[in-house]
Length: 356
Image: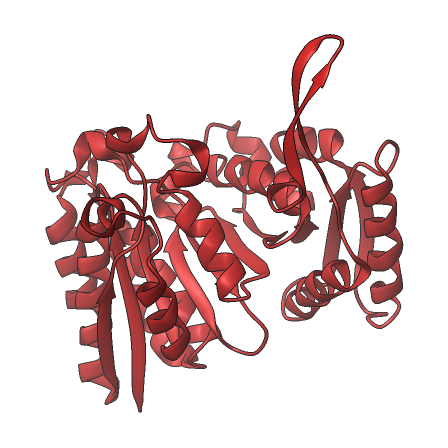
């Protein structure tokens, strides 16, 4: 099979980790008889430098023509002084909106070999962690009405949290479908004791749950959910929530697994189209030093094979290779501990390819 992948290397360590993911994909292609064709595109700070804008129209058009998008990371200190609507990170919001990427899937998996890196007490995570956060991506406060106005207290700024029924319904269906393939439990997170938008969210999620009688549904307020993630994370299977709450909880979930450098993510549209990227940022302080952990981006490529291309065996090959590399004690600086073998970005990618 032949697949067309839009490559957005991005900024900072983005090019380094994407290059290793491409090497892994090429290894998979050779082993399983596929062909992956890549179209390099600009977005983020590098696009600002080259084109004067963080998300050129040509990038959007090329992404729409591709079968999937693989993204490194965007942003960095160089562009921190730009106005909010001109910053590199706005490219992510633009891509999500233009490509219809309404569902962000973030697995929080504690690898056995990295159990000591988890900041929680061993008895809390004994037996491992396997949580998925399903975050709504194109609605809520990040895309709502915003502005400033004069008040008796001076200039005030506002951002509006708004959700429509269909926006909630489609993300809820995504979460319940995923739960059916896992442990059949969904935790919906909102703030329904205070917010009208959350009361609508809770009503719609409850309605969707009726179509999934095998799945257990529970509701938690966002403050309680954040507490429970560190108190007893093993109680969770699939967490579904809105844009801003999901932004916070998915990062919290990623840190209890030991390293943000290990975690992939997928942003999905209707059908099988998706954009795949590591959870971590551009880390400009280590860019170009062969120190970045490429495993999150490599695992993001595995998610691409599984969710968009339907290549489960190929995705398994990548994930098992990553587990094997970790089990043999190889570590990039972010997950290195005494007694393990320190390797750089390129060597980590080469080791995964060798295991495949």
